[in-house]
Image 1 (cartoon, rainbow over the protein chains, first blue to last red):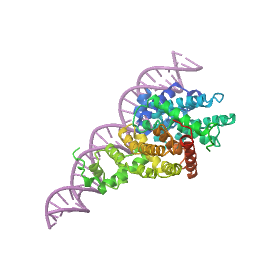
Image 2: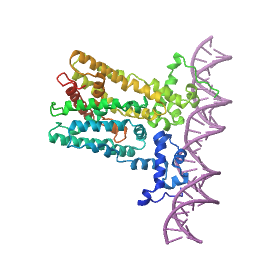
Image 3: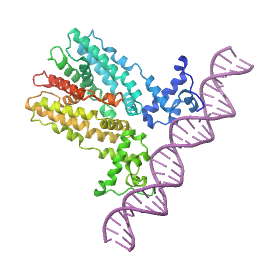
Image 4: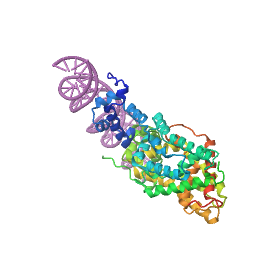
Length: 215
Length: 215
DNA sequence: ATAAGACTGAACCGTTCGGTTCGATCTTGA
DNA sequence: TCAAGATCGAACCGAACGGTTCAGTCTTAT
């Protein structure tokens, strides 16, 4: 290989052309997965020439890895912003539940999960990056929220992290699984709301101030 | 294509050669996914000639689909056998929780899930077949168990299916996620047990006879 | 023994794969 | 204006892709 990739500097890091390439690549990777995405299809989706793609990224692998690493959008941050511990706990949990539920069943999200999961054997660092920016980040935020609510006396939990894990599982309650396995394309919004309400009720039965200690 | 696949009769349905081919193919598909698995690698893994593979299956796609459809082993049946409603509810739930948890973190299982999830966009029927033999079957069994325990007075639940969904999520509590995303290769057994115990406690707090009605 | 069927291993096919090259053209900055 | 760098589109490369073919060998049943 005689053509070295462009030396990335701060300005080039955010160049429009580079972003254009990554946007086009993301579409193809999300649709076909890493192995199913051909470089020629990616090139078409980018709207630039193949030579230019290779001027920015040395290989298909590097393009994919870079995409996943830099795609750690503030999605989880925005989602968990509503964890305002000055408000009543059930109110917050219902709201976070609905936001979380809607996010987890969005078609783009399902497709993105599928792509990451599929690629995680070959690109474990990419899988890890995604996991830490998403699920783990969310868990940490919810754990902190629960700790504060325990301190305030609204909740009781010996193990706030386990409580947070349970909460996240309860409010979603596996609703996205049929989507992941291709069983259906849509989940009715009422289903999400139903799971959220039931999940919050169960969580409060176990961890609410009136409940017996659970852990 | 001049060579037609072998007409499948009852005996050929279970022929050793056909099984050999599918066993070899499964190994390669599970390791590399559908797109990442090459027919040449599959042929090597089967230990038969390429011509023979094509004598039994008309294409790579058909081989994959057939494999998934016929792989509906009685795994879920065996797992949920312990749902014996003549025993105390907590005892049964702990036991099913441990069995379920161990199954869901087994490396072969993780790899199989990954393969199915990855392929579900292109092969939704295969994804559905897997889902119905596994998660949906389990949910139905647990729902029936909960209904019976409600009838016996050990549990109370207005919505046994939602209760079953919650139970399945609680006893596992997302323990396999780090595996799916390639974050780690192993989950300590104590972690599974801990999640099971906490999950059963939360479930009983919400649905046990002494608990307030949750749904 | 013989014939039919199953299977083998090697070669083949047209197409696609990821990656490379390059003359021509465009863009940008001095 | 000019030169350097960026980009283009087309062609190319060797390897790999899924699928096909076939002479030879093995297996089985009569």
